[in-house]
Image (cartoon, rainbow, N blue to C red; front, top):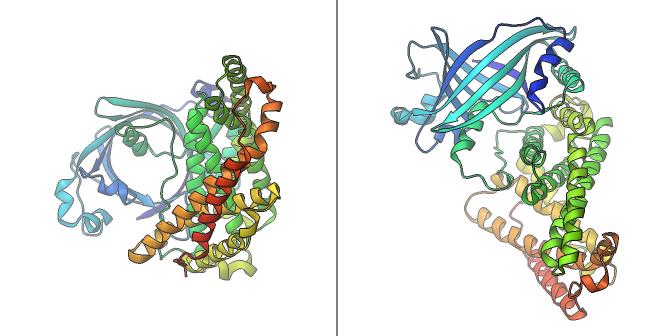
Length: 485
């Protein structure tokens, strides 16, 4: 078994590859043609457990490879890898192969599921800080009669420190726009078989009791980055309201994760990364506000005005996402999560090594206590305090969702589900109340006249009703079972 440290980069403009290679002063490399067949059971058992099994053919040579995330202590960009040669396109699973242990007698159920055809060019680059294998892959992933083309760069550390990989990624990004690649080739093929909606929602975070709190933080933050990147890819090519909403949710979840783990992961870089994420979230805000408004406006002239403003807002959001600041911020985040100063601080070592369930108990308990302590703010006269309560409810919900896999059995699971339902109800009611406060200024900012927005404002009776709904939800939270203890 080998462990590889690898960073994948997606190119914004694949046609810029030749110019990039010249700028890096890399000699032309004759591409190797590779054909890979990926195997799984009909119910995708390997994929559900984070494994990929392939047989790749290069000329007459076939190599069987099993890959899986490296697991606790090694970060999200490390992979465990089992390789050995095979004589045909039929998997051979030895007793020490993890697939044998996972499937048992079901190894006979393995069947070809996807194919990936790749033209790969490889260079070995000595940066002084490390030796990096840079692979340029161009090809397509196929599932049935569907295909997804790709052009991507893989940077694999062969010798030296991980910093060298991230430094190389930044160097490439300054020569041609690249972004963190979050999908493996097999995942690109898998997505061809799924019914894909207009956006990508957050996936459950796979935490285990074998992890440390530091491991849990990395997995949670990496899931948030992936959530953002999948929706960002859509938004770079289309005005997509669902993807925009999910991208903003992903950024808010990531900032919540930074706050939840701040006691453990606080260093000089964390503050700047959080500020950059706040900036990016705000750049997407105007487009989201207009998306929410448009269905509520009946006046046809106001509708046309809003749609023009929407196009402009999406263009601004796209400029922010396409900026060098955003692209490099994601690389910086990946580096900080993997090898940032916080991973070496002696004073936080005990927190980093703590069991994630224990860390979750304190984090959820602290946020719960702060939220229920602000119950009176819901029916008070201070709109700002009510808005702050809404933000705390959102952070608490995200935190419960982050650690959900640690509270997913029996009575704990039922109590968690009921708890989340109460938070969602509270969020919905407080969200409506906040809209009622900010709506007049938003309409004025967009240049809409009062006669164009009739019936847009709510009366005092409606406001009181939503306050009652929020109070009921808060009352449910106050008496809810503390499933995290």
